[in-house]
Length: 279
Image 1 (spheres, rainbow, N blue to C red):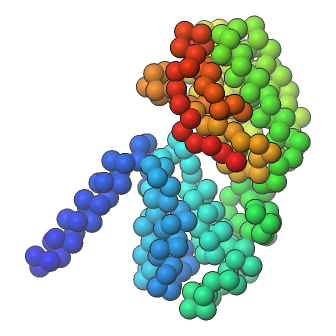
Image 2 (image 1 turned 90 degrees about the vertical axis):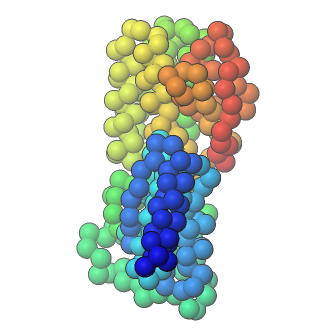
Image 3 (image 1 turned 30 degrees about the horizontal axis):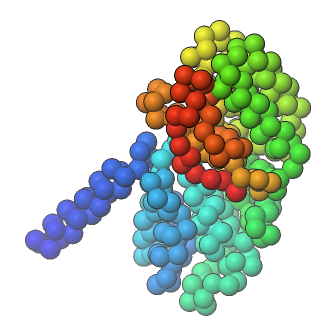
């Protein structure tokens, strides 16, 4: 009895430690197929990222507990990584060629055809095919770089530069140009959900007259742009940067590694740091 109590205490301590390390933590549980001895390590390693996400996998129950910073990633993005490591889950099928490379004792029974509402739409990632059976919009998201996604990033960077200059007429001009790019998009670059989010925030920036409030909206705009940057094959590096001073901490994307703060401009131009490099 004492041993059970001790194990329970250690488990609670472990969960508390995870939440302490990950800000804005959200926890979700999903089914993941993986019944071999090494499955736990492979799945947890694939889905975990320092200070952003952690995965705890129960081999016996076939469940993965995902704890993640909801401002920096999503459960879908984590499950995608797990699938790319070879393990089917509630959201993604593993690429066939990756599954086939698993050790024989790790090759579980696959049942693609019987899953209701499955989406047999292929996604290319690292030259391998992955099929999703939930989140239709996410499944249809093209992960190869194309002209549409590049136009969206270019429009974002031009607006970021306008915020650095604190030039509201230029902000309005670039926000309007950004909206035009989004209106011309045919879901080749972003999912319907991402497109709606981007358009809503751009509209608010255009309507807002207060510069500080516009900057807060620009910080919100960065969230879906960051997700887009993680889900396309980039032509060049994009730098995910953070200002610890603005509104308790705000992020932006830049095509340059040098810091040019869009939330303070010349007042504190070099305030901030690069927290992640996306390639």
